[in-house]
Amino acid sequence: MSNQKTDGLKTIMVCAETDIPTDGSVITRSVEGQQIALARHNPGSKRVIAFESRCPHMQAPLKFGRVVDGEVVCPWHFFRFDTETGNTIACPNSEMHLATFTVEQRDGNVLVQLNSESSDRAVSQ
Ligand code: FES
Image (cartoon, rainbow, N blue to C red; front, side, top):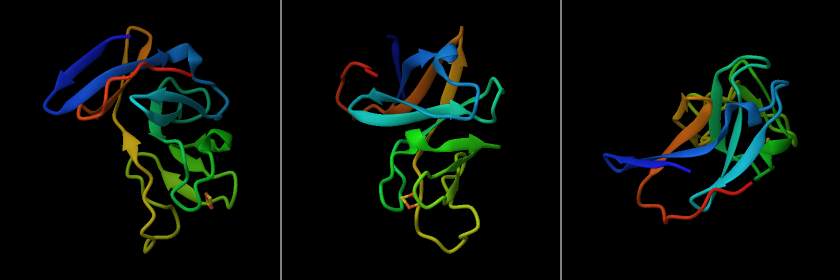
């Protein structure tokens, strides 16, 4: 796996683009000790998005959620989160916030940007 550090951020290859399901479902990878959820922005699209793997409401595993139009739907109480802003859809005054990660797609691989202060650990599934 290739790692690249820039300005306190580390770009880490987490999987191949072909590992990301095309049906709106979500996979997770352990990266630098964090579980990161990955999905396509929309079923069938090439664009990949990344966000924290637990729902900020009550920690539901978002790997059982679905993504449509860049919004992930939590499998437990069906709150929706914008995966670009991390904001809750339809709850504008909510303090819940979903952490999101910048994704780069290069040569058929998916890379995510993390703070480089994280400890170095291998990527695992
Ligand atoms: S745990 Fe996700 S909406 Fe409640």
